Image 1 (cartoon, rainbow over the protein chains, first blue to last red):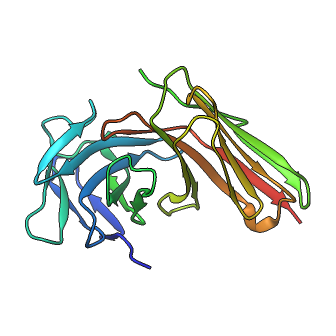
Image 2: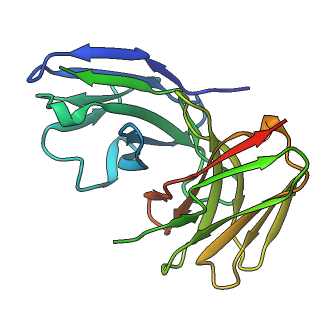
Image 3: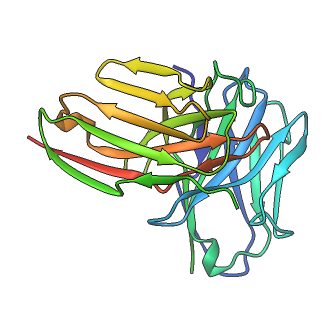
Length: 116
Length: 110
C-alpha cells in the first residue's frame, strides 16, 4: 500500500539552529500538509500546499517556518531558528483531492524533533 | 476558534463490551474523518463521512455523522484488545485545514 515517508524519524538540534524535515508524499497525490503534535496534545495544522504554493497556513506557521517542493517527489518543512517550544512530532500528510469524500489524508510516521 | 470536543477522553472497558465515542462542535463541517493513532505513529484514516445523517460501517465499527454535520459518533461492538488505541476525529471545513479533536484513548482489557 502506498505510504508517506518521512526522514529523519528523530532529530535533535540546538536551539537557534535550522532544521529541515523531509517528506516523500504518495506519488499521485496533489495536496500536501504539515501537522505537528506536541507531546500529549492535539494534532495541529501547520500548512497546506498545492500547485507549488501555500494554500492555507495556521497562526503557528510564522516567518520561522517555510515549505518547499524542491523536486517532483520531496516536500520539506524548514524551521529557520528553532526554539525549545518547537519540540514536537511533525507529521507530513498528503491527499489525492482536498476534502473529497472519497479520499482521506495519508499521514507519515512523523519526525520527532527535540530542541535542546 | 473552531473546536472539536471529544468525549470521553479516556475509556477502559472489558473485552466484549460495546462503547460509543462522541465528537461535537458548534461548527458545520463539509466532512468529518475518524483516525486511529498508535504511540509514536501518525494517524491512520478509518473513515470519512460527508452527508448529514450518514452511517458507515467498518466491521465492528459504526460511524455516524449528525444531521446538521456538526457532530459524529463512533460505536464499537464487542470490543477486542486489538481495538486499544487513540481515536481522533477531524473536521474539514471546505478549506485546506483539518481541525483535530484531542482524542479518546481506549483501553480494552482481555
